[in-house]
Length: 69
Image (cartoon, rainbow, N blue to C red; front, side, top):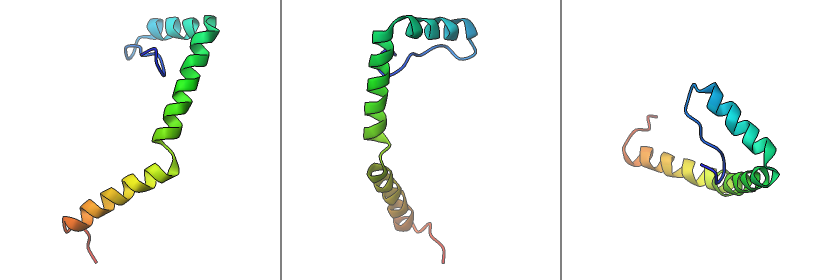
């Protein structure tokens, strides 16, 4: 919370609207959250990393005998 986004309780529109107003009123906060969110997205969700994760899953399934011909 406050690093790459703003957390609010689920099903609480008042808290959500308060958080949105805060981000809109604080350009520095909005910029920081956006920069950090983009950094995390580039690190965690790039194609090389996703392919590596998928290959690990396939490898586990094959080793466990879960593949059928």
